[in-house]
Image (cartoon, rainbow over all chains, first blue to last red; front, side, top):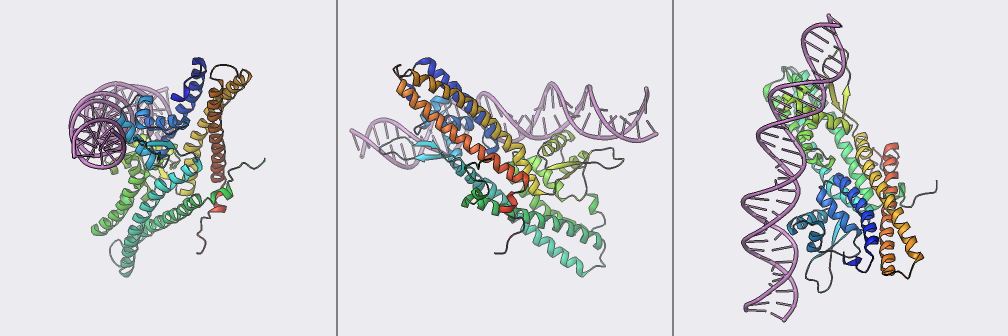
Length: 194
Length: 194
DNA sequence: AAGAGTATACAGTTTTTTCTGTACGAATTG
DNA sequence: CAATTCGTACAGAAAAAACTGTATACTCTT
């Protein structure tokens, strides 16, 4: 807040209230990124800072313990929403928000969603293999008890899993379109004239 | 589980273990949609069912109270991941998973992300208007104390908020590309041959 | 319109998550 | 190399969320 020195009191209050509205909105809506309110507020406050901040700095600003700020900041760094900044001769670590929100979104998909899709794909592939083998075996002994029902069941499951795998394959390519920036060919950053 | 009657015990166990792997994977990765483990498991179990399920049915399957299943199911319905099914002369409500996962993803963005973007946009616009007015006023009295610093500050904030609004504008168009299916022009469902 | 069976609102309990203070290891200065 | 100062691991306290059982409102059949 040292950037506010020398500015009349009432002006400061107006600016802070305008900022506060945005910070609060960010806070209430950042749950889609899987972060809690405190971390979202931390991000919101950092958004308006024009210089990198320290843990102590933000702890003071938000009235929270340094430990909480530390873990919160780490969460934001893991999500690449915040970057660590190096400054010559600075004792404390410095942090600032990643200003390119398009990249933030892309990174988020890469970090969280892609990983989820890959894990699910792996599980699906293993179970699919198992079930296909079961189906093979069953087809070789069609006289066994309940064989028809079993085959029907297996075929249903297999079909579902194949469809799911198709989806995850598509999703993987979607994330790649974000990573490569190809997505901007379809949806350009600069709004085309209506 | 009535669909498993008449099938040998050991076959059932193999199928259930294959299913369980997938259910568990879904459960552990569905947090990106903002649902908890129980709800994710509920979804996972429903995924493998070939017929609509009832609340009691799933309560039994998952060993949970009907109340929990009810609220969990409602969450999934709100996210359009599960549909209510109407069946003639059925006393109980019936539910089944939305089988089109492309649509599920699209709906999720429409329901959660778009709303978040719109709320943030609204907050940004209001604060932006306020700050622009403050800047106007300030530029008319450049001799006031701390005026230069104040203008600098306001211009910084305004620039940031304008950039953020640009991003939300883009995001809005992105979600529309999902809603309209245009996204499949860029990333086709059927994998092009490599 | 009555009656049986259903889903859910609500309050209390249990479980999980978040937050804090202390303690410790790493890095930096003098 | 000693003395600071920093960031974080860890354990316990506080807060939030999830789950359950009961009670109520609603729907559908008859």
